[in-house]
Image (cartoon, rainbow, N blue to C red; front, side, top):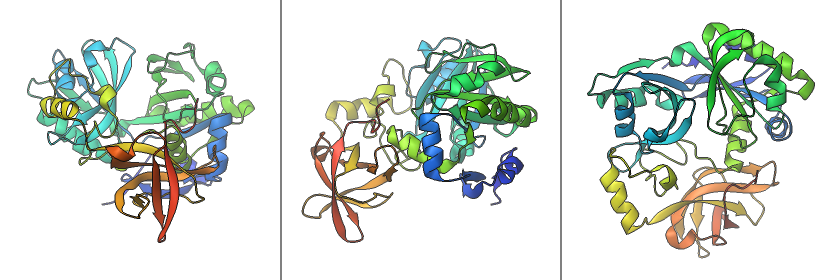
Amino acid sequence: MSLKQVPLHHIHQQSGAKIVPFAGFEMPVRYSSDLDEHNTVRNAVGIFDVSHMGEFILKGEGALDLIQRVSANDASTLFDGKVQYSYLPNGRGGIVDDLLVYRISEVEYMLVVNASNIEKDWNWISEHNTQGVDMVNISDGMCLFAVQGPLAAKALESLTPADLEMTYYTFEKTDFAGYANVIVSATGYTGAGGFEIYVSNHQAEGVWNAIMEAGKPYGIKPIGLGARDTLRLEMGYNLYGNDITDETSPLEAGLGWVTKFTHDFIDADRLKQQKEQGVERKLVGFEMIDRGIPRGHYELTDADGTKIGEVTSGTQSPTLGKGIGLGYVPVAFSKLGSELFVKVRDKLLKAQVVKLPFVKK
């Protein structure tokens, strides 16, 4: 299958980005170094081109009912301009995808889904659209820029009349860099604060250049997927395909907080039963005590070297200067302070279960 390119591919090439295949796209993984880019976002401001993400518009009287049926969180609590984190249960106790639900109006919503799952999610939601809700996949026509870091609001304030002291998980349709009807939201996947800018493809280059120019006094830099991964992992945020999959239970993954039994949804009965009975394993965060970097699929063991699980995401934390990771372990090993071992090249390196996020805001 040939890889897609984001509309600003040429700009990333001109900026010296290393381009790699990711989720069916050619994506910039880094421009300088992962460490430099990570620290830029933690301490100042960076811009990610995450236009590979998918966006669907659901419109009509039955839009909310459809969202309620296919997603576990309760979208009836949303109001115009509010965003919600949720997931799509797969009917077998696993997860089709995690997503964001934007309420544009009482009868119009935007769903933001992971790039690797665009087609899968579209087919899954379409299959359950029995009420004739108007569904439009706008993914190919949209660009998405994430401007992240403590100086993000300062860097953007000259470009928009919107009040950038936005409440977390809200959005506004506003003028931005001379363009109308741009969605500016505050959801964030880095824990460093900031905004997401949704624009149509023809506006993308103008908006990107305006952000780079306005951000110059604040040291803005383009940031690749490498730093995106270390930033989200320091916050303990799940990545679909690593920490949550079609095979993982949302309750084991710690998504009980967005599993609302106030409405009927796919797998509600199964998950309610699982909640009552208790799960057998849990996704935990752990920090290395011994020196070493945990990587995805490395074995997690007990003190005797018996395998008890595996690392789903792991890295060297640039902020903490030590190895951190996520992984599923039996409940007996999930308590804070529990000792785990990571098998690295036949060596057992000691780690400890810690409270998430790894880096406190």
